[in-house]
Length: 415
Image 1 (cartoon, one colour):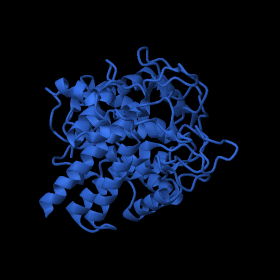
Image 2 (cartoon, rainbow, N blue to C red):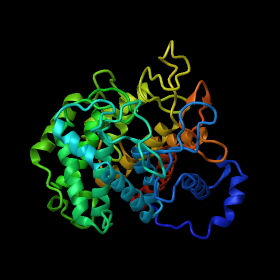
Image 3 (cartoon, one colour):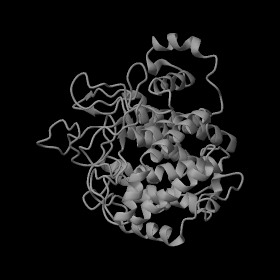
Image 4 (cartoon, one colour):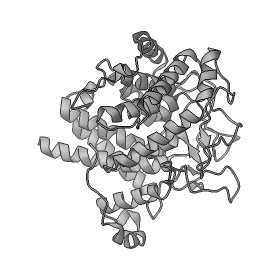
């Protein structure tokens, strides 16, 4: 449950907080500090640059928009009660889809795998002001971007928020174009470049993301337990039952692996949160694989042999970059599992066990954040890179903090 308190009136203490070590702050002060760093990345149009890094020291600049990063970065706003900011961010994504709608129309005509940066693919990265595409150098065919968008817009609408805006008819046509695009490019069986923009392969995290988004709008009762009142999304965006069945069959055939080349991957945590699209047994397998094989001292590696910022590319195994984001993600997952166990009882561990896991990962995350409370993208060879904070990692800290606090509160009420 998002924290409903406001940060209004607390600006006066920001200077004082900035002079103290993050780990010495109270929980409320940590939340305020972390959220302030995230807000520093927010732009006037509602988007978030991926990090403040402008490429001064060589390498790729990150002070630009990634569609996925924006949608995850704004998640923190829901957990501090700032729904207006979250809705503004998702309306920006809507603008981007409208701007490049012709690509979806062209892609829907192909009915085949679209390649890395073909003219039928909406690019994952754009300029933060002009919203023009930046690069053609790597794989842009990333299905999870559409899945995340459909899932969260549907979720917000079911919670009573008007995400679509004033031009409802035009937006609904766009949403139907997205569904047509996903259906015709065979999202459940054809390869894409996944969350990490690498491939092409068929990824369980990509299939799960799209399955979650389509399931939300298919509206067959799968997610109904999350909402206090009924809003029938299926009347706005009809999603055929056979599409859902194909997705469920496809993901079941791949799990617990991420892909043919990767038996496990940090991106699979999305199947548990935010999507909750896997069974309890599948979630247990995913967590076991990640915790036993990917967790390291400064974070979670994305997958074995990952070459991105690898400390020794000639011997990539055991030298992979370690992402603090993974600690945040695991803390959120275990807090959500604790809440589910408190409410429903059972699952595969007691609420106290989940709570202890969540607490441990949150503490490990805070231990690798910067002294002023920023979450770096990664550690390589014991050092961080220039991307601090990484927007969606900073957001996940806020979500982890609030999710754990709520689980503690609910646990106390239960006792």
